[in-house]
Length: 216
Image (tube, rainbow, N blue to C red; front, side, top):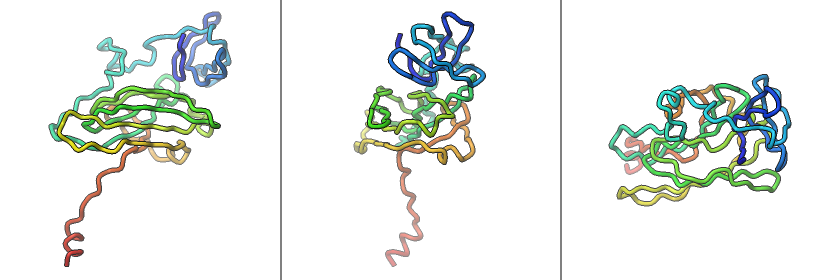
């Protein structure tokens, strides 16, 4: 069974269930229950529960895939920016944090996400994030923010439009408490409140008056 952080599992021999919040070793995982208590257990002693974490709109349509997070762009204008790392808490267990790559641009992103901790690297996600969509790429225990690994996110921009190719996006940072010290904001593509960290640089706004004065 391919278990990963954030998966919702049920114990085989006990009436317990919760989210995986720690990979202890190749055989043992840490599962946090609804009382925010982490229980070490053999991976062979749990079973994966599918669909528990679906949002209401997923249940209505019966669609459990990440495609449910895709919101089509309503504007015909090409949007060249707006890449964010969004963090929301799990609706069933607020001790769990889910990270999403939010793409508000018109580009399709070819994404690679790796974590780094104490010199060890682990590939967490590789895939595409379509224009005007979001995709979950990682989960972690919110209370362990001081122990979260360093994130390395690399993205290539792709479009069939006649646009000059953009330089690849590279984000290599650690998430710190100060990044979550601001108030939560609504993330339209996720339809939930959370924190957002901008990964690309917004286009500079030109002050025409200052530009005129510089020529004078």
